Length: 334
Image (cartoon, rainbow, N blue to C red; front, side, top):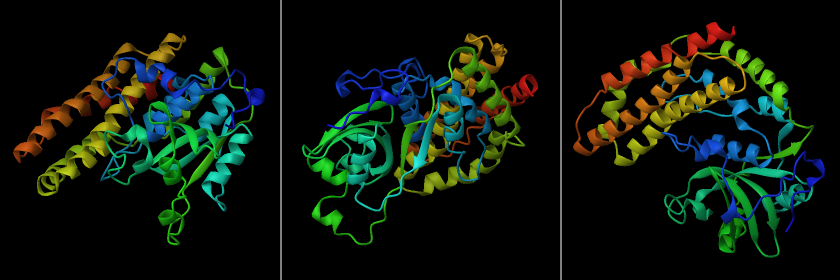
């Protein structure tokens, strides 16, 4: 198996066996939202794997806005990751098989971040594995082409697959390989460009990035915008197939709730490292996250009973919490 070389790393970044992998504290500590989305959760564990603290890169959470049909999809800034940790994520041109490119990059000590079909990922057994075809992102750290085996990071964990699943993710089965209409997936590779910042230097750079992100904060309260649009959203949920509810809540309640819970964790990290942030700001961010979960449960009941619930009290609470987070943060740091 092509293992990642430690030559370019500050610490030993060889991963344990998937069954022995220990998640980062952000995925182990008590949280209302255990996961955010495949991209954020993946990078939390990738940074953890590289021996870096992902808390320092969570300032992207202050920029989330309402986009009319969804909340801004939370994502780590790759530029911030480069500045904080010396890790560069570059697009990998796919002109041969994805398998061949993964072999080359892992041989060079890189990790390959690729869009894959959850249908072939055993760790999605409870949701998509051999059931539905959905796009997701995984990070492959090692491959053994002869044995048809890979180990990979996905969502909040570290896993392995082999055999027919290997052929599936790399489109090597006769049916997949012969599909001339299939597009190449989007793929990146991660490499170490320099040592990560540590200690006070890491904290100070994180604060600098937070100030930049606060300059890009929404011009108006996004929860208030959502509140105005929600009656029409509620009508659509009652008219559409039940599966629409799950898609809606993933892109609405889960994204804003988990985003602000991560922001709460970030503010706690800053306080723990000597950067004073009023405790009520952190508490308000967590309150918004919790209320988003309450609203999700309310909508589940409404959908099952085919009844309208405009959740005015939930939206009022979240709107107020937002006002107690972002502008006070801007006043503190700008």
